Length: 254
Image 1: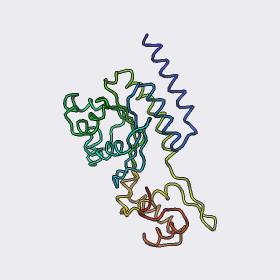
Image 2: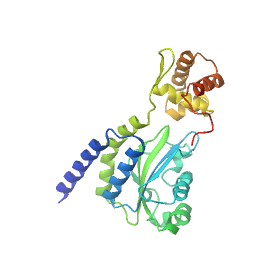
Image 3: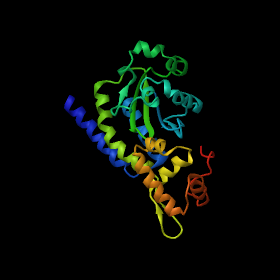
């Protein structure tokens, strides 16, 4: 029986990879949430993004109608989440493989944890949680699935084999497009990311940490941005980028 089950899982993964290859944005997230939730018989499935440099949550989603304030509270408390706390506090990079809370805490300890006791349990959300990270930096992006029974070895293996199919799709979906400038020059997607870091008030080293780059590489990208925009200095560069519509006015992004 094991072989047919494994074969069926692998066929499902191939079908998923084919089906989501061209998707972007909410359509991609909603499709993954729905498909994996059905496969795992999850009671609540969510998706979130956390900017590790600013600890802002730019995006949240759930697979069914749910109090958005609840999802916000769940993910705003990610600094206390047993799986994410070390990463958010910058003591180490998030581990690559899908993980259950019970990989780091006993079920009894998790049920006594404030996040479970105060946020999840009162709403009848299952104690067993598995996270599937699709981008560890500069913005931590992950799917989370909750139910009242543990995820077994076959299900964890399924998620482990699914993850490599999801990561490149999300990477392509999240990388900003290049921006054509007056005069024929183009800012690359990476240069736009660097520019956004500076617009968020980050230093070059902080922008480098956000993007997982060397500080020297970020400086080189900034040199290119200054040359293409005809500016010097962060304030003039950000103002020019806003004027050209490359960036939104600082402080107005959701």
